[in-house]
Length: 255
Image (cartoon, rainbow, N blue to C red):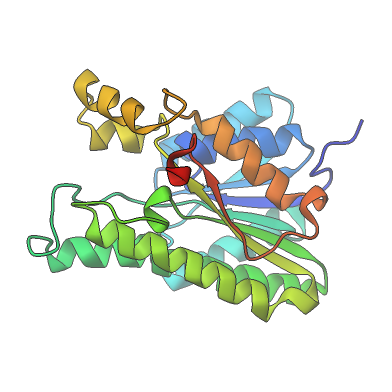
């Protein structure tokens, strides 16, 4: 039986670990040829090897999404590897300083969050949508926002600003290109067991327990649980879904 993404070419940024890596594996399981991208070359190449070991097709292209020329080259590299582009998961992101308040946040920290988490998504959409239009074909994009893109988080002003911005970019692009059959959605994860969360809690069990208590389901989410939602949003099963900011957060946003 064909998978939900059979014969599609998928680009996934930030896929050297965590949610992005699981997305690469799930997209490949569903029949996609996957372009893995990350600033972490070792992690990205490990993801490619995992996809291949599972019987899928994958290629790695290094990219810093904060740099427009690198993103343009990434999309060109995806097309060079597999001939076209059909879906994209713009997932690359950083957490920055998670201790800074609005008045103690440095300009460097604010710029890091905006340049990677927000401007990076814009760069990716810009060149991905241009490629869809050149092909004259439908396309699907999912951007990684966050629960922090829906609510305020003390000591997270720069990250929160960027992730709220991602939802605004997503909705705007969805409206701009709806008639060209290009769908753009966002996923908003809660607390997920990733290397980023480990850095945020400093690897401490106390920190993890605090995060678990924030989740109504009483546990942390798994990267694959986010990736499954993204795969669905990228598939034709979600053909009437665009402009959505989907919470995948164990019920946190419902509180």
